[in-house]
Length: 363
Image (cartoon, rainbow, N blue to C red; front, side):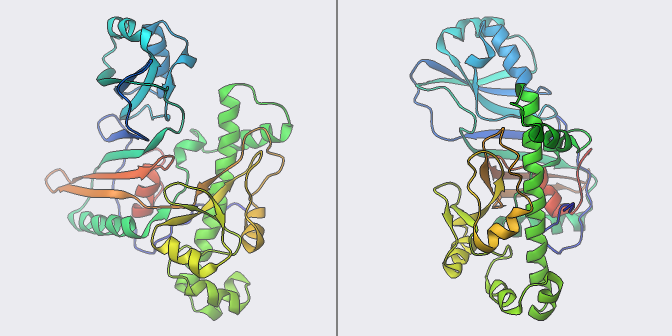
């Protein structure tokens, strides 16, 4: 069951240097809805450098004489980056924050008000701007056409290496905690168990990408042999217009959000998927998660863990479409700026790894 990550596209690797630093990695949150402009919550649009979201919360709590739990945010942003995110605080903290917030690593860009606080997940997505080094002119051109093609065809929505800790092994501790049957203590245990959830999802996704790649690269007869599937099934799968093959019982979701449904009519589901109107989802196992059925359920079962009950289960898009992809190459410095938008919960490094065909861990 220990697959490494499988890439979806067959092109040759594109070499470049990636480092996640304040100067090379920019990310901006796109809010889920416009703020009302009035209400009991102050909304701060904050630019932070070299500071984790958790640290930002403690700095704001101190400045505003608040409890950290009074501060709302939509998502966690990396420390080693320049990030813009939205934070909500009770309106009465406005004066104290204006007076006491002195660190140069935090800049308030805009403020407005809203009737409700910001909650986790209250964002549409993120806009990234990343600078890659040591890129040759020919590779830069190929990078651009590859990235633009992926904008049209989509990419597998793997969790990025950031999810799995420094040694990429935090999920093993998470598995142990999940199997102990104890209630989770604190945010660290929660993080470890969710790393285990994410690990199972990535393993499942890698298996599905690998099987789709086998069908794309081989004849029906050969693919059936490799996959140990009956030929008529492979024939049906090969007829689907999109790369990532759907099975009966897969759980689809309208893209980018909506109510989940099961694949019963293969043709209809594949057409919606090929048009980017819906995408298949993978399991984040846990309490009350919706499981796939039929053939898809059978494929999912090896990556499910019914002992993981300490966290809510969910489903996550298996396939996403990057948007607003632009690249700008500087031949003198051999650097390239890559701009793109991804839906919430998706990793910029996953997109870059799919293009470059290399692991970016450690930069």
